[in-house]
Amino acid sequence: MIKILVVGKLKEKWWCEACLEYQKRLQKYCKLEIVEVADQIGDEKTILEKEKQLLFSKIKDKDFVVTLEIDGKMLSSIELSNKIEKWQMNYSDIIFVIGGSYGLSDDIKKRSNASLSFSKLTFPHQLFRVMLLEQIYRAFKIQNHETYHK
Image (cartoon, rainbow, N blue to C red):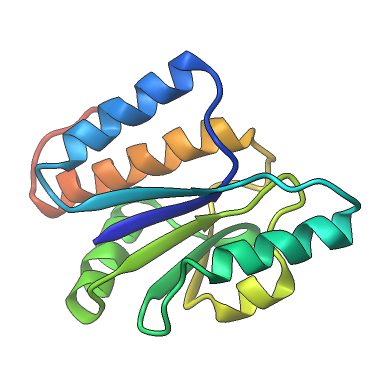
Protein backbone atom coordinates (compact mmCIF):
# COMPACT_ATOMS: atom_id res chain seq x y z
CA MET A 1 0.00 0.00 0.00
CA ILE A 2 1.07 3.54 -0.65
CA LYS A 3 -0.07 6.02 1.93
CA ILE A 4 0.20 9.78 1.74
CA LEU A 5 0.27 11.22 5.23
CA VAL A 6 -0.30 14.94 5.15
CA VAL A 7 -0.81 17.83 7.54
CA GLY A 8 -3.93 19.79 6.63
CA LYS A 9 -7.00 19.31 4.49
CA LEU A 10 -7.68 20.23 0.91
CA LYS A 11 -9.97 23.22 0.87
CA GLU A 12 -10.48 24.31 -2.72
CA LYS A 13 -12.64 22.25 -5.03
CA TRP A 14 -10.07 22.14 -7.85
CA TRP A 15 -7.37 20.63 -5.61
CA CYS A 16 -9.84 17.96 -4.49
CA GLU A 17 -10.79 17.20 -8.08
CA ALA A 18 -7.16 16.91 -9.17
CA CYS A 19 -6.34 14.57 -6.29
CA LEU A 20 -9.42 12.45 -6.97
CA GLU A 21 -8.42 12.12 -10.62
CA TYR A 22 -4.96 10.76 -9.72
CA GLN A 23 -6.42 8.53 -7.01
CA LYS A 24 -8.75 7.08 -9.64
CA ARG A 25 -5.87 6.53 -12.09
CA LEU A 26 -3.71 4.90 -9.41
CA GLN A 27 -6.36 2.28 -8.54
CA LYS A 28 -5.04 0.25 -11.49
CA TYR A 29 -1.56 0.04 -9.96
CA CYS A 30 -1.71 0.11 -6.18
CA LYS A 31 -3.78 0.44 -3.08
CA LEU A 32 -3.60 4.09 -2.08
CA GLU A 33 -4.70 5.87 1.06
CA ILE A 34 -4.51 9.55 1.91
CA VAL A 35 -4.47 10.30 5.63
CA GLU A 36 -4.87 13.88 6.80
CA VAL A 37 -3.97 15.15 10.23
CA ALA A 38 -5.30 18.48 11.43
CA ASP A 39 -3.42 21.75 11.10
CA GLN A 40 -2.29 23.02 14.50
CA ILE A 41 -2.19 26.48 16.03
CA GLY A 42 0.43 28.13 18.20
CA ASP A 43 4.02 29.13 17.80
CA GLU A 44 6.31 27.21 15.43
CA LYS A 45 7.80 24.95 18.13
CA THR A 46 4.36 24.05 19.53
CA ILE A 47 2.92 23.40 16.07
CA LEU A 48 5.81 21.14 15.04
CA GLU A 49 5.53 19.18 18.30
CA LYS A 50 1.76 18.67 17.94
CA GLU A 51 2.06 17.73 14.28
CA LYS A 52 4.87 15.32 15.13
CA GLN A 53 2.64 13.51 17.62
CA LEU A 54 -0.23 13.31 15.14
CA LEU A 55 2.03 12.06 12.36
CA PHE A 56 3.75 9.47 14.56
CA SER A 57 0.34 8.13 15.60
CA LYS A 58 -0.20 7.14 11.94
CA ILE A 59 3.20 5.53 11.35
CA LYS A 60 3.96 1.91 12.29
CA ASP A 61 7.43 0.57 13.08
CA LYS A 62 7.45 -1.61 9.95
CA ASP A 63 6.42 1.20 7.56
CA PHE A 64 8.87 2.58 5.01
CA VAL A 65 8.69 6.34 5.53
CA VAL A 66 9.57 8.86 2.84
CA THR A 67 9.60 12.47 3.98
CA LEU A 68 9.17 15.29 1.50
CA GLU A 69 11.69 17.98 2.39
CA ILE A 70 13.41 20.88 0.66
CA ASP A 71 16.75 19.35 1.70
CA GLY A 72 15.81 15.84 0.54
CA LYS A 73 17.32 14.03 -2.42
CA MET A 74 16.20 15.17 -5.85
CA LEU A 75 15.40 12.37 -8.29
CA SER A 76 14.27 12.16 -11.85
CA SER A 77 10.89 10.56 -12.51
CA ILE A 78 12.63 7.39 -13.72
CA GLU A 79 14.78 7.27 -10.58
CA LEU A 80 11.70 7.74 -8.39
CA SER A 81 9.93 4.97 -10.29
CA ASN A 82 12.86 2.63 -9.66
CA LYS A 83 12.94 3.55 -5.97
CA ILE A 84 9.21 2.94 -5.50
CA GLU A 85 9.52 -0.41 -7.24
CA LYS A 86 12.42 -1.40 -4.96
CA TRP A 87 10.65 -0.17 -1.82
CA GLN A 88 7.53 -2.15 -2.73
CA MET A 89 9.58 -5.33 -2.97
CA ASN A 90 10.81 -4.93 0.60
CA TYR A 91 7.95 -3.17 2.43
CA SER A 92 4.22 -3.67 2.39
CA ASP A 93 3.48 -0.05 3.33
CA ILE A 94 5.25 2.99 1.91
CA ILE A 95 4.28 6.27 3.55
CA PHE A 96 5.00 9.63 1.94
CA VAL A 97 4.86 12.39 4.57
CA ILE A 98 4.03 16.00 3.69
CA GLY A 99 4.45 18.40 6.60
CA GLY A 100 2.59 21.57 7.48
CA SER A 101 3.54 25.18 6.93
CA TYR A 102 6.66 24.83 9.11
CA GLY A 103 7.75 21.59 7.48
CA LEU A 104 8.49 18.50 9.56
CA SER A 105 9.97 18.10 13.02
CA ASP A 106 13.51 16.77 13.29
CA ASP A 107 12.14 13.60 14.93
CA ILE A 108 9.96 12.84 11.91
CA LYS A 109 12.93 13.47 9.62
CA LYS A 110 15.06 11.09 11.70
CA ARG A 111 12.37 8.40 11.44
CA SER A 112 12.31 8.59 7.67
CA ASN A 113 13.93 5.87 5.60
CA ALA A 114 14.33 8.28 2.67
CA SER A 115 13.83 11.98 2.11
CA LEU A 116 12.87 13.47 -1.23
CA SER A 117 12.81 16.97 -2.60
CA PHE A 118 10.98 18.03 -5.74
CA SER A 119 12.73 21.39 -5.81
CA LYS A 120 14.44 24.01 -3.69
CA LEU A 121 11.30 26.08 -4.26
CA THR A 122 8.50 26.21 -1.71
CA PHE A 123 5.08 25.01 -2.91
CA PRO A 124 1.63 25.34 -1.38
CA HIS A 125 0.86 22.08 0.43
CA GLN A 126 -2.32 21.57 -1.54
CA LEU A 127 -0.48 21.87 -4.86
CA PHE A 128 2.30 19.66 -3.61
CA ARG A 129 -0.14 16.88 -2.79
CA VAL A 130 -1.30 16.92 -6.42
CA MET A 131 2.30 16.96 -7.63
CA LEU A 132 3.18 13.96 -5.46
CA LEU A 133 0.17 11.99 -6.66
CA GLU A 134 1.08 12.80 -10.26
CA GLN A 135 4.66 11.63 -9.76
CA ILE A 136 3.55 8.39 -8.12
CA TYR A 137 1.18 7.82 -11.04
CA ARG A 138 4.01 8.59 -13.49
CA ALA A 139 6.25 6.15 -11.60
CA PHE A 140 3.79 3.31 -12.10
CA LYS A 141 3.37 4.18 -15.79
CA ILE A 142 7.16 4.00 -16.15
CA GLN A 143 7.36 0.68 -14.27
CA ASN A 144 4.73 -0.79 -16.57
CA HIS A 145 6.36 0.57 -19.75
CA GLU A 146 3.22 2.52 -20.56
CA THR A 147 3.20 5.77 -22.46
CA TYR A 148 2.55 8.96 -20.58
CA HIS A 149 3.12 12.56 -21.61
CA LYS A 150 6.55 13.99 -20.93
